[in-house]
Image 1 (cartoon, one colour):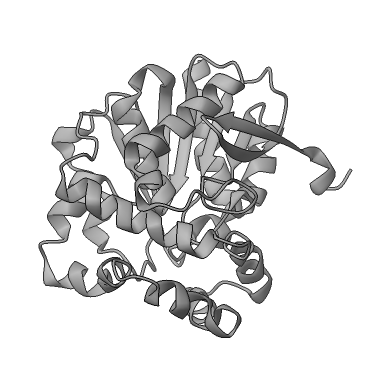
Image 2: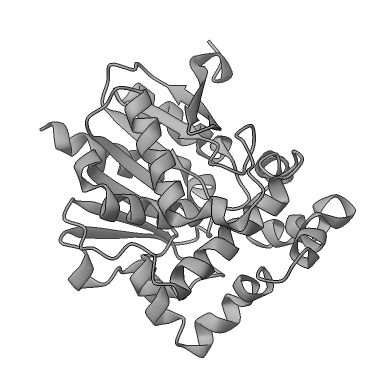
Length: 288
């Protein structure tokens, strides 16, 4: 049986926003929710999903709102942290689970932390891959070294220009940035499928705009995470300071940080077997 034939799809409606989800494994098994970042879609988890399913876990990878085959509401306010967290909760409810494990990469990792802060009742364990704890990131952004790496966060606040730059000449700028991380041409094309559909680039940039607005208005989640956490960090990360691998100790009760030398920001693409094994070990522990 091919890898593709082992996958199933389901569309979930959350208040009129349809969320496209891809699943692997038996729905009766413990659920692991996998949240992608920019500019990806569900398929960034393709290799990891198969490993999780083979280990007796039910892997669910949505196209988050604005990406892939999910709906793309047009306004900045449509991508507030509160609405994104509510989308994740809606997916959990739709699959009939009381608690789930959650893993996120890049912006999906930030959403993973936010979900665990705002809906601890739904989370049993969490993991993030080359992502940031929101409070840790706010602190690190006070340093010039991280400000330089995060120039795009401020550029994305401009109207229309970021969308034009990211998509012009068949996403030439975006392709070059992904290639600089060492991704193959095939992986790059697969990732870009997340932002090729009409409205997706605008929606993806609105994630950043909404996050900035939430930060200014102090609407980002701030609560201590009490569930066991795993951080997987590719040490060839170009976009984030190495200090961000360690979340603030006073905001996380229990965390294990695993560094993968030679892996980039796209650690689950560079070392899918190692990442899959780490997630399985971390998430299966809850069943002991």
